Image 1 (cartoon, rainbow, N blue to C red):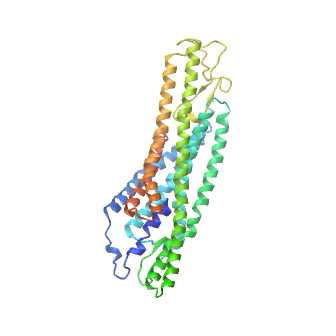
Image 2 (image 1 turned 45 degrees about the vertical axis):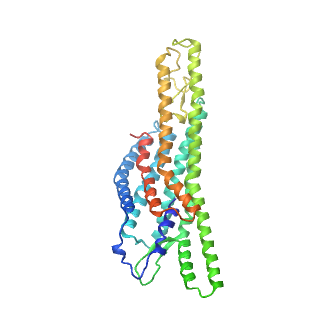
Image 3 (image 1 turned 30 degrees about the vertical axis):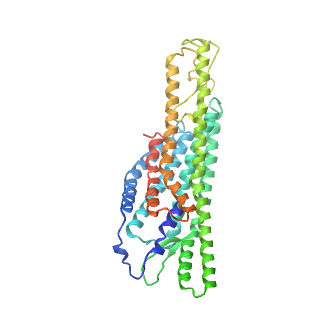
Length: 386
């Protein structure tokens, strides 16, 4: 995701006359001003919000009785959001304010690694949450599900961190500090293919023979193809594959609820219409709340204080089931809509830009990229910490 943005931003190498440009007097476009304002708002609002959420979640998680996989996932989503808010956002504000990179080569590579790592981790954790809820919906009446769920979540999160590190590592080798003109104090943290393309472009203009120009043109397009392959792979892994997993998981959750709830309602009606169940009959009641898909199934055998519904089960039970189902479906819809709303516009245009050889306006992509940083502000609200 960030690689595509940086590649587009670094076309500035081709567009600037380094001998005659006063970099301090460069004028910002209206979209750039809006982008800076969005970053500032996300930093000022999202920073405290995520810190408060992380503190509350961590305090709850230290209590063994409150510990569950949903809370565990929220903590790690908070970590990804905090990295985005406090690493990516400030550096973008500084870069867009100064138009240059002042952090040196080492910090350039480290920052580009964490930029990509943040967004990989964010997408992967949300995908794990979706898979966990789908798994909970599949085993909604399995007593052992809650014990296995936590273990599977730990495995999936460990895999998410490993994948985020692996897919982000190329950034360390791809990006480097580059000064196009040694006599001009202008440096950028730039991908290697932008540097090579820039050099080939200059050499093509100075080429004296047709053969030399053809050879340089072939190298130029070879670099361009490598860049396109990397960007397509990057966009697929950071957004399109996780988004597909999330979409299928939530569709499974939504459609899997109806048979189970219908079974409970019909089972109640068969015993006695708005009456009580037989004395020897027990129904395991699943906690179908907004985080119900973690499948915390309760029965009198596992929890003596749980209600086995031996007594009155009437309209209130049906109303509670219906309300819980609506809450769960609403939360699933909000999660999916928020993720797709904030991530899809940029990723769709970025993919189109990659496939159409950069015909999409770069300013539009940069502006839409800022919307993705809004997601860490929205996440604490979506997952019910407030």
